[in-house]
Length: 272
Image 1: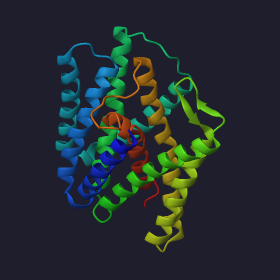
Image 2: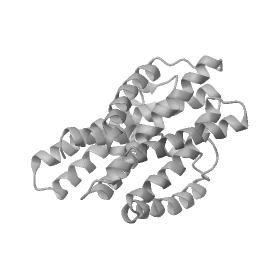
Image 3: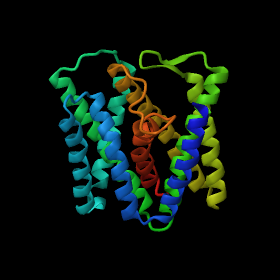
Image 4: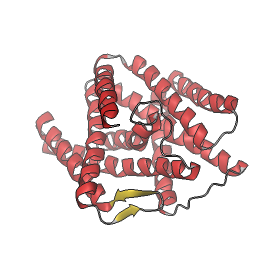
């Protein structure tokens, strides 16, 4: 399993980094829409939408909404999407903090989870596209965001393994601990501070980047917990088995779905 994970990571990471740094924003928008379309198919199976046509129609409709947002143009809608995302993820924090595991799949509950999938994916896609499209530093900031989340996840994993005692959300994700959260915050915070000091001569800019990064990491944890809740209610370990050794697409981007809108909102608000 470990060997498979390492091979998959060795293939994916250069593709992701190369795409972010060298593809134009319209191509990045298309690739992200396709990737998130697969993630939406996984979400449809977790809702669950029972029929195969419904599982295909659901991501198709939301990808169509992405295209319509792109044609709007997207910069006209982005503030609405970011505020909607922030409100949603605050609501999601309340939801996962009081979650109950149930196998119920009534029509109202499936409809609610279908709307949640839209709130999870559409603002995240829009935020990543707008972030990448910033005139001077878009690709670098997008790469920074990804590395920030990767380091937060890694820091949380290793700190949790070494010092983990107090459960974070035992009903939703029994393996996660508060000590892991602290490890993720410290590792990502140090990275943001280092980048801020090296990238800018302004202490204000560096401090703003650290603040936006820490808020982003905190919300990324909610994204992770939300997908864990969906999987536990469905009785599955992974959202799918598309990525060898890593599970599904949502298993790789769950933190990012919450992190991307919050990060863009933060740097815009702080005028970074």
